[in-house]
Length: 161
Image (cartoon, rainbow, N blue to C red):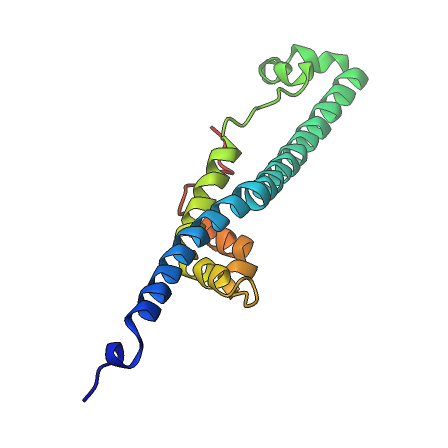
């Protein structure tokens, strides 16, 4: 029985193996650059927007409570003498902004690196076919990042510190 190496000429096998190696390496480079230029900035915007939305909702609720308390104390000034009201008097000075110290860029970069590692073969196929065939890992790269975020692969960027 003849082996496949005897059927194909050795130079053709060597060239094909070299093409696969080059495609594998350049596929990883393409994946990293696409992640850096397109997916990491989009991830940063998404996380910053969700963080701002949650801060705004909490801030507006605190603002409503503060205004209600101010209106009540304006209409009934004798309430200021109660010990309980003295304890909550700092609420009248206005809400204090809390600042999130989580670095969204490092979280998104971690997600992108994990997604690149997970879709490395898809990018190799994409490069090897000269971008004619687009595997699902390439077309759904942001979805892969979102799935990795849901699994907690890089921690939770939404937790305030």
